[in-house]
Length: 112
Length: 113
Image (tube, rainbow over all chains, first blue to last red; front, side):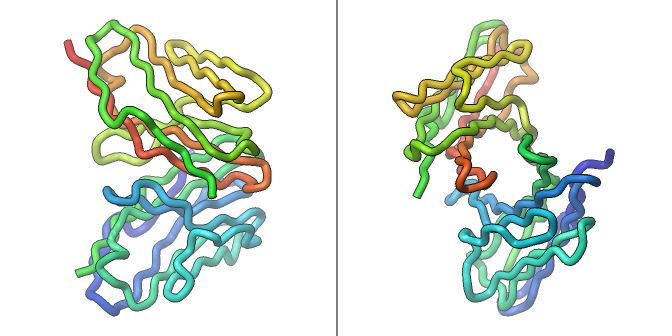
């Protein structure tokens, strides 16, 4: 069991560029969550899929952020026109049924 | 919306003593309360959880207490060891949120020899 896999581990973009973050959940886990972590805001929920269907995107900034789960083996978080305030560690987690969420190592996004 | 407050931002205890981290929540519908540990430069690692149908749960040196009336829960780490040093996050989730976790701000626990 490799755990939740996130790629890339680090990404640096220029202001206004696009960033795509990838997450591979633990095999068999039906739910995938995205969070982001900053020193100032702490851990914030972004969005959640269950059985590939979007369930809750209440934490997603509406204009530039989007997430998809095209199949059960991966999810993507896309940020268009990145801004310095998007700099954060983006964490993906997966869950089997109603049990605990397992977090990946995160992608550290730096927007210059 | 739901808020989770973690009362201690830092906590320092001597090795072998007990550490207690306290959290409160606002949503009476909250029913699931996990705790996560984050070591320096690493991601979140699940340590223990409690559901609202019980008020106490123990796993080895970890004890979680839940007081639903006060909307308060706490993590007790007994016989602390140097490897317990980390940032600990409490979180809450309700049935209607279907698993979305709302996190506290974190407590940096230092174990001193």
